[in-house]
Length: 257
Image (cartoon, rainbow, N blue to C red; front, side, top):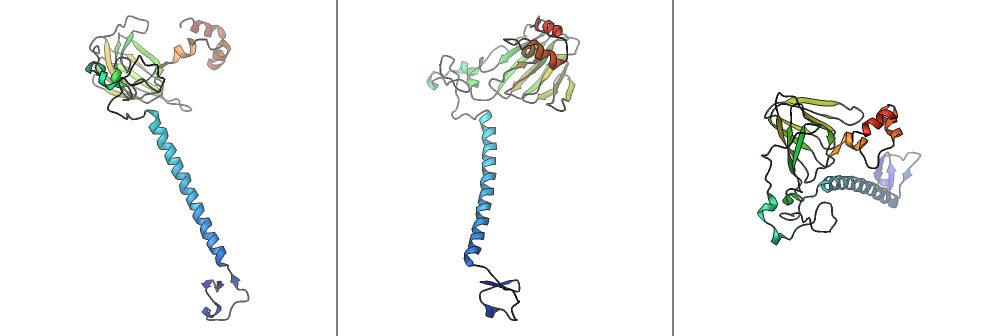
């Protein structure tokens, strides 16, 4: 095979004019090798893209896996250690495993924060196990507060059923932007998963709300308690430097928790 005047030909007779001073010959085996190399490169690109997509879907799916059966009522007596709770024998499942009574009863807000949370998590409703959902009633005395906290495993959607609430959350670094709003009765607000947020009663009387969360066990991380009430305590010099205050201030804060 040769190139004649920039055209690939099979033999010299295919050229209708005198050959140029330089005729370039290309071996058939080299042409095949180049094609194979291109195919290998393309296959590698497809493999990389497919692997990335598979990993992405795996990360999403593995966060809160879908049930593989109709239900998996939690068995609190099981010694099995899994990501969640072991399943109770389905023949032993009853209606009360899927029900809970008490969200109509106001919580006791006679405490320093002036608030109370009545959870309906997997601990209260065993039938929630593996279903990725839960809820809670939150009561607020006048000026009652749910202090800054986060849910490491769930997004929260809150509905005000009585009263007036100031709610807000803070975005992650580097912006640390406060997004806040005053909610009236019937209003709904969403707290994205993992972000620090708070609620405060700013009405004239008591208030209460219902929250739904995207996990059977959303978890709660109270910012102040985590930093100043951990066991064992975070060293004073670390907290003092982090907050740019004197160690004596840290000691006073730790004494509150």
